Image (cartoon, rainbow, N blue to C red; front, side, top):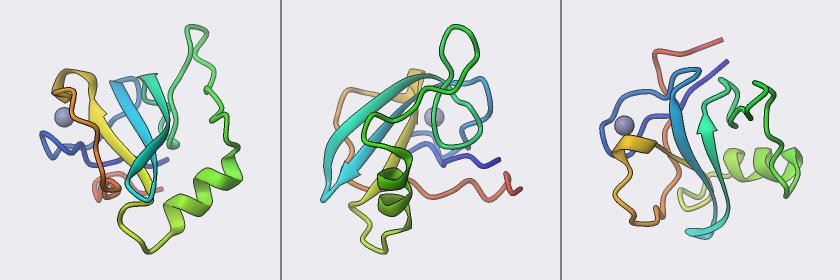
Length: 98
Ligand SMILES: [Zn+2]
């Protein structure tokens, strides 16, 4: 399991916390997931099942692994998000390591 550092408050996204996850490619949002954080880079649906990224997990993993900071997932707690689209990947939460 892992979490991201919220780009507003600087705290980690913990399992079950409502979040927005933006998948970035060259600084543009290509997909967004909203819901309780699942602990593995996505969110949960109403049945507590992980919601799959439509672009496919391989694409998400490749963007996350990219050394370019404008690729990957940008994360915010829902209550922290101020409506401005992010342009940079979130760091992984150092307090959550599997
Ligand atoms: Zn936050």
